[in-house]
Length: 362
Ligand SMILES: [Zn+2]
Ligand SMILES: [Zn+2]
Image (tube, rainbow, N blue to C red; front, side, top):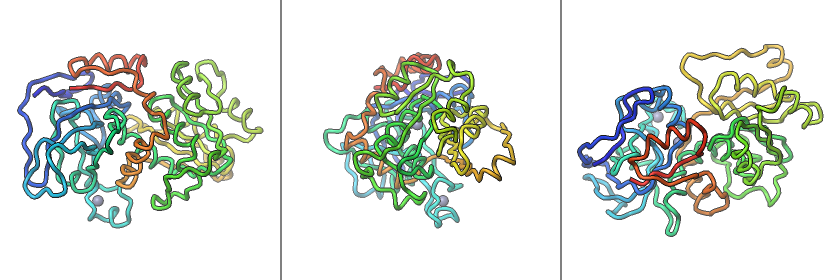
């Protein structure tokens, strides 16, 4: 079969490799649609990832597929079932899993390789994070379950309350998903516990003001269409914290969500807050980078700085359900559909920011 293999920094090769066969507990899917992701772009540019993978490796982690083979002992699934297999699953037995802090599981099983004709799904993912795609749901939409699950995990930990003014830094797919979810009230008013996150938004008007700062006018237009109250191109703003203060009665934002993975943007996120604010540091930065935090601001302004990573099985389920409900028009994030052979060009276009996400059809 044809599969993309990542060898290192911007070294992605399409190769003919053996089709996978499932061991006990595993399934093999035919990849119907795989979506490109900002994380993939980051990994491609950096040549690796702290948690997800080590080159050389199969590549890609968002897909909708169809089961073509079942390993011994797999029950509840049939050949032909349309599925989303999340890119990871927690072990369910460790210290963190017993506390239901699944994103902190040190034994997360990661799976990469959606940019291929077939993909093997490891047993822990079959057990805990393999979901059936509802009838009639487009594959490309189902493929976005993984990033939306991360975003729903992010909103559940962002401490956004009705009436809040939320600043989102970064107009990538993740930042735009935060805009869509928060504008409709998903995750608003939760206390941070995954269990109390309800799919129903808080009424028709959660009255959350979402202010998006990004670097691309066309993406900012998408943000506005997804519900952002105001959008700004940071390239045209001399002083971002001053702008945010001017939009928030001089105080700063109630919540800032950083979705770029750039250390200077983490510092900028903190600079945009009001006293008592929560900062959700969502974009993972390059290895061994540090930021500077003003101790006086952190202490006397009682800031909450939260790192938020990945997702949980509950959020994976909520994401697929939410996508299937069509409440969020996230198909707007898919700029284009292309064959697998054009994958590298898709990454070049993502790097140049001429596309948001590309649906790859192997
Ligand atoms: Zn992703
Ligand atoms: Zn665990």
